[in-house]
Length: 290
Image 1 (cartoon, rainbow, N blue to C red):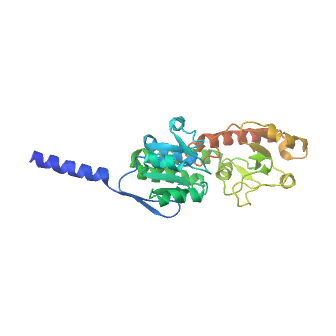
Image 2: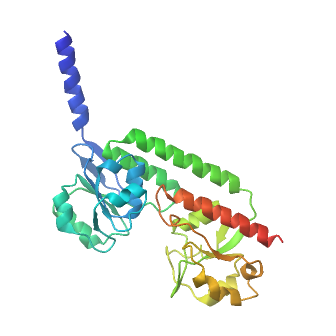
Image 3: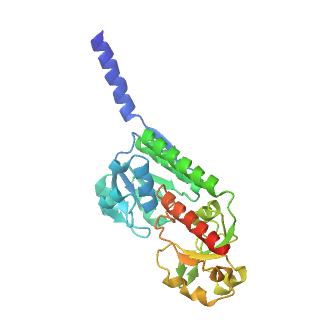
């Protein structure tokens, strides 16, 4: 009898280990794998970050350029970036699945992977509320649901804490500069817009659909923001605004850069950037009240 129980246990254990998985991606496709993915190629920094948060870091065999979060991701071989991938190298890695950024990776490059029969999972995290969901789905894809659920829950808890802490704060009109030549900002389709809203800021260009629209200097002057900031950590590109003495942001010395390298990363590591942004807007409120 014991031998029979052991045999049945081994049979079911083997079946569980090789059971197929099906996960719906952000292109609305049901991606089915014969078993959880244990060889994964990520073609975007945010997806690499999300895979590690999903507990699948040990299964990531190839990443894209600029996959700097978490730190362990820097040790994974780079196989491409948003515009070009090393197809031969990816094939050589024999991935169970390639996770791609739906709007960020070149469609022609992704189609080549598909034609070779390599499973592709499209991801498109655009809002803070979607980060945890992406983490959970990637965990299911890799068979690491426990770790994914745990880290997704922790992300949502901290996000709710920040949202509650800043819900009653005085709202500030914010111009967020991401580039100065040409002058570029964030529209409502950018996750930084979400972060601004959570921290009690009103993006003065939230009426624009593009994630990173180019705008005119005059348009910024007309909308007269309370705060002008950038997330690059260097403030030199903002100096030109300080000559516009009539701007509310200039009057209250609220033209500055913040050191938040993960703020534009639509994945779990964005939380530190959001916290930095919220703290910066709190300091801006203090200066505006003087």
